[in-house]
Image: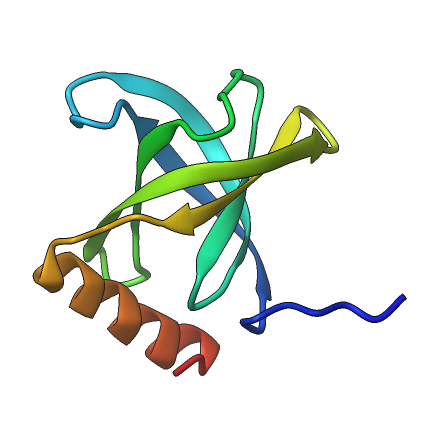
Length: 110
């Protein structure tokens, strides 16, 4: 089977905070297991519904906070919890610019 992904993934193990879509309630501390120009995958012990929007937040090695809205697309069994694939669903241009700079500088994704 040939994988037909739109964007190259880079595998990671980055701790992230997941918040409700309005950013007011922290839902869980998760692990981001991969990232790409189109989205990311997180592993969590909490349940997220397909279509649910969550705010994912993490810090770069320089302590710059990256915070981006995502939408859950699919789930599967992970190592310690459930693995969720999510696409970016962010409209704030400053947040998208920070994310794109992070992808370019740390993962050579452009």
